[in-house]
Figure (cartoon, rainbow, N blue to C red):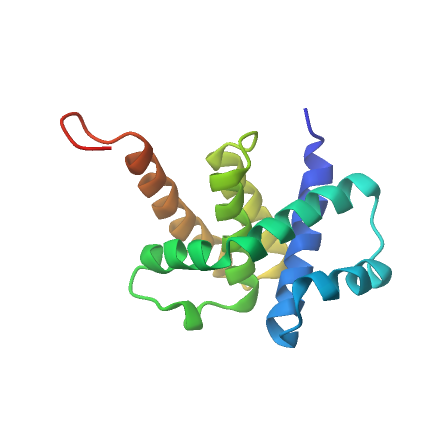
Length: 148
């Protein structure tokens, strides 16, 4: 069983990297070594953070499309950089990390955004991720008599 503290720290590092990447426009693979030079981390933290970073960057169009649908009366450009990165990380975990239940991904996202986002961010992130969780449940378990 993975250490929850390691994963929390890895999520924070992934957030820091993705946040900075949003401003630099650098290619993520090129920027990652410099990030680790400036922000050393334990190997376990680094491994999981890199898994999240790689996953978010490689699935960005899909993640953003799904988040955009869940943004009730919002557009992606209005979402703050911290909140956007947290949503991407959590949705990536919900879709692609089988040992992270959606409820854990959501709770972790809320805890991380409490530390790095503004006062309204936890409620906003919770609402968006809850809509995404419900959409994923509906997609994976269609109603009887419907095509899957």
